[in-house]
Length: 289
Image (cartoon, rainbow, N blue to C red):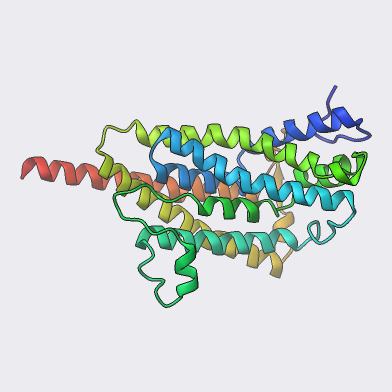
């Protein structure tokens, strides 16, 4: 029987199966490295199909990074990834990219003219089109550098059991694919929800832009704050309240869970409520006029 909580002494086949299942658990449980990004881009795409694509694009970058890290783990070169400060550094970098992406989405790049090289990297679009999701791939690569229980199991338990350096990347790849399978579904659900609202396409575009932009921009600032505080006081990163649930990502209420709740439910939820209310007021005003 698979021990997904604390696997050890795994055979090759069992290790690979474990890596994929752990990836699925990682993808479906509230995780600060996946849900805020998938939510933001899926809502911004305002359709189930493009929401699914958002989850796919993000998770592809995530999978690529995890495969590379798994290969490094096989060669015993992941010490820098597993250091106590690496998670906080990832928080800061993810936060910077999120904040820049959110600001860009809200202002459509108009404020980046003083930084030409950055403006060239950002996709040019207009207010009538869905939020561009190509930056989700970059988010995925950066988020894949995060550490935690899942990364520890993959890098220290499963990757070292691979038979040769040529397949050292496979556990990370399978973990990423497991995450991808769940994030595609979650992205589709987020996109379907906004698609199912009985509002015009232009209104969906405006709502998607407002919600995804706010979630990324202010969520990014929170990520940066959490990372900086974690570097100043490492005990913040280690803090957690045990829930008694023997499932990673659900076993404790910690800084990661709090970030997910505040960013997705808090910033995203409030932004959605404000956007829908404003759209309703505009619609009533149009009809009354």
